[in-house]
Image (cartoon, rainbow, N blue to C red; front, side):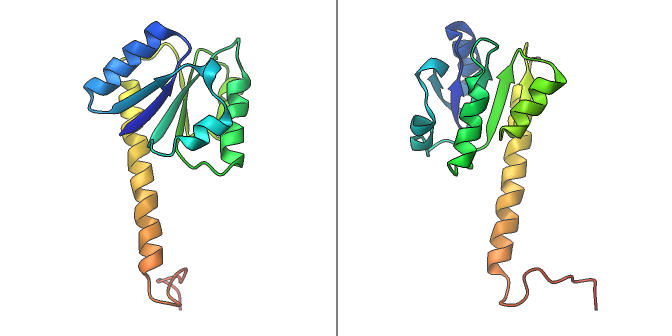
Length: 145
């Protein structure tokens, strides 16, 4: 999986990058302060974006929202020390596909990435089968009259 990892803390960023690379992923590491929605839209060659949303820099929620409003469909996972229910709801409502509270438990990020990949694959399979249906067949209830 090709991952854009956005993490403000260089030590955490390198540690997560090493962990993800060790699991076979290709990781591009960036610092949140240097990003804008325009730059992220240009990064079309990633399978998932992982954002660290920190309490001192909550514009990250707006960045995710702006990506979605701009038509970016790349899955987004938020990592954050912000752990209230309101924070998690705000992150998911901004357009994130998942929200993980720090500190990370060993293996949790990788397991959630696998789950995300399964959801994306199922969605792609459904889209492909809808496009390959015979004309007039898509959307029919097979069990109905």
